Every structure is written in C-alpha cells, then in structure tokens.
Amino acid sequence: MKNFAFFFILALTLVSCVQKAYERKVELTLRLPKKQTVTTIGVYGSGNPLSWQQPLALEPIIADSVYRVTFTSKTGYLQTELKFMVNDQWELYNQPNRILKYNTEGVTKMEVVFDRQ
Image 1 (cartoon, helix red, strand yellow):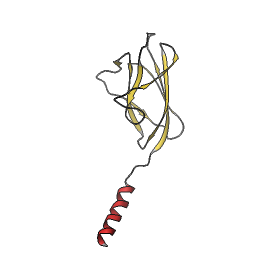
Image 2 (spheres, rainbow, N blue to C red; image 1 turned 180 degrees about the vertical axis):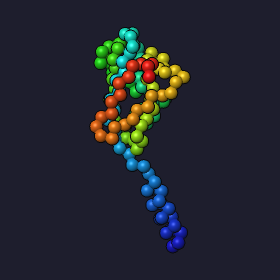
Image 3 (cartoon, rainbow, N blue to C red; image 1 turned 90 degrees about the vertical axis):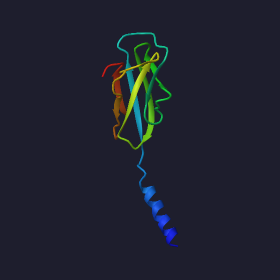
Image 4 (spheres, rainbow, N blue to C red; image 1 turned 120 degrees about the vertical axis):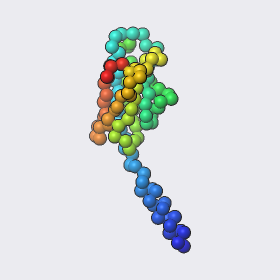
C-alpha cells in the first residue's frame, strides 16, 4: 500500500510539472531589399509548425519582393527563434537567429527585411 501511495504522489507531481501551452497566431512578413527572381522561400525555426529541418513556405504578396505566412503555434514559451531562406541562401549568415516574442493576446506580427537586423 505504501508503494501505491508513493507512486500516486510521484505521478501527481510529474503531471503538475507540465508547462501550460497556449495557441499563438503568428503573421510573418518578409520584404526583399531588392526585386529578384524567387524560386524558393521559407522560414525555419523552433516550435511546431516551425522546424530547423523543413521550411515553412511563404506566399507572395507582391511577387519577387514581399512574402507572408500565417500560422498558429501551440507553445508554453514566450518567444521563439527563426531565420529565413531565399533561393537556398540563409539570411544573417553567421549571425544570431531572429527572436520572435509572442503577444499574449491577439496576433503576433513580425515584418522584416531579408538579411537585415
């Protein structure tokens, strides 16, 4: 009986350690500094649906100059890291990743220019 009580309390303790997750709606807008032919464009990052292995594709708003993606992420974190790639070229090469701080209410919007901090 003592073993059951011990494992029951242990299980309750482990469950209470789980961080609460929230749905965060995000809108990323990427502007290219000069018009160019775009064959591939995507964003990489931490936290589903972002990934460092597979890009999340952006859609053209103004072809060859402005792109956007909107997604919802379920997370308990207040921020995430991300980087864009255009035509197989990483932005901010050998520089820190961009930090996206989630709004606690409403849509989190980030508008950036490719390869510029």
